[in-house]
Image 1: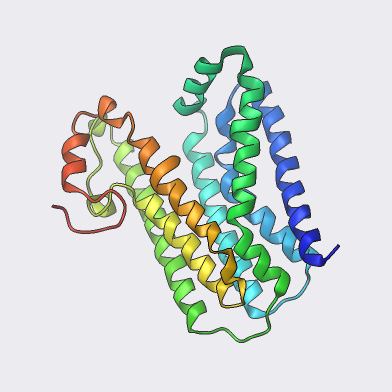
Image 2: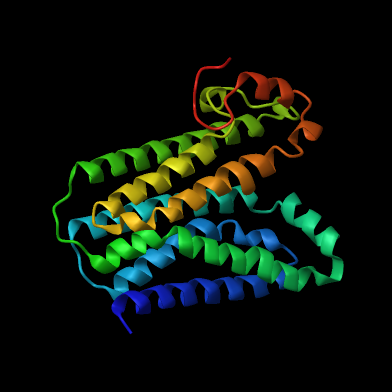
Length: 259
């Protein structure tokens, strides 16, 4: 078996095994949302597993490993702090009600294993770049990718911080956050995630992993049409009546001046 195939199988096995253990814990705690903080950590786990199996250290490999670790650690720490002590997220509560006694195994397949496979697939550009370990010097494409990654981390970090401050003020209960980055886009954190993964792809593509373009494309579809913007806004107007007016004047995803 080639090193490439060995690496892909190993990272998939590590991710799925870790998520299986996490699922057992979620069943014991009756809280499926403990998977959320793992999302960023899962990518860090994939990166360093790949790095351990392919111990070469060209600049591009180190760059991808460091950027992914910074992004993943920040996201996991933020979600862990945000969710701590708040119980199960309403998305999983709704699934629990819908599936009843079947939820314990439904959550294993549709929440934990599915997210593990998506995580592994989205991380393919990084895995491929680390396995091939191109010794070619960093180029303008790497610089563009790193700048796009930096833009994404900025939007995610600042957007999350601004929203956390807004929610911490009891006077804002039931109100819509429309300040700072949230004045330019209704979802600065999702836009940031979009930039991060296209930036990572550009860096990986500069080492020859351009054929993994389906990975950032899948992530983009998820953010725009599946688990991101569409899912979040499906019921939000029921909880926040002012949100319809916010939708009318603010870009859904890509930043721009209010209408």
